[in-house]
View 1 (cartoon, rainbow, N blue to C red):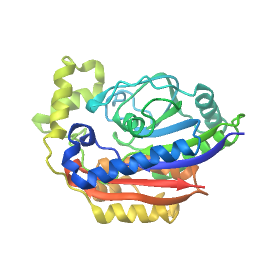
View 2 (tube, helix red, strand yellow):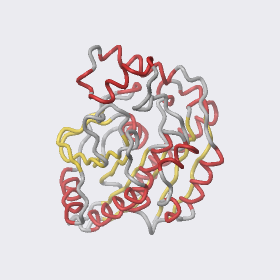
View 3 (cartoon, rainbow, N blue to C red):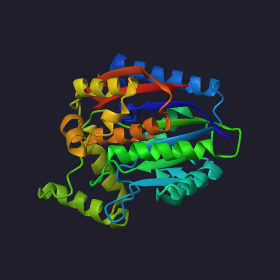
View 4 (tube, one colour):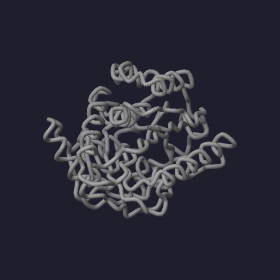
Length: 310
């Protein structure tokens, strides 16, 4: 049977790619720690990476918003935020086994044979699998478009992932990576906003990418919303509370956090901790250690890396 050997949970931020210097020494320490995780995963002999992250209204919109999607065939990066348009190798056998294991356990995952992922997934590839040497299974969680899956449901998805890996008939070594959060406030309007300046973007969010007449102009507007932020709010106290619960293995408390509590304390971007809950569900018997945490307002995010060891 396959073996889970490691896990890494880490924050992502577009600013790492567009303005790495803004993070200063704190940012350099994040990048250095990510490099250590890269080396560690290679030393552990990782054969497959399961990448759990979210989409930022690049592939999924309110015209069709699945809670959980697994890529089972082709996968390509959008190339947003100066990241490469990776042609991501998918471990199709494991991906399909995860899908079928879900169905056998009353978990109806959406799936895609032509999945496209944005920086949520590809920034992890950039730091942890830059040469695309290790095939992946990409899994996308809806953390952007309410109503969101509960934290408890995300944990349950992780439990099914564990069942799938444990029953995969191979001797391959599998590592899990979750990317997202922690606290940050993303300048995307709420879908019910009545502000005139939000209506063009809301029209696209409701109706999908096909409604974009001038894609380059649309992407420039979205990018300017983020890059115009010289500094963003970060809730360090809440970040540390979250990391304490993760490192102490207190998933029961985290499973009770609801979307309103998360947004009040960690922002709409803080909803991305759902990706971490999938990891926690799969790695309940692993020891979690905070390898890095610092609030980096210049990257508009509480930046963390947590290492999960057997």
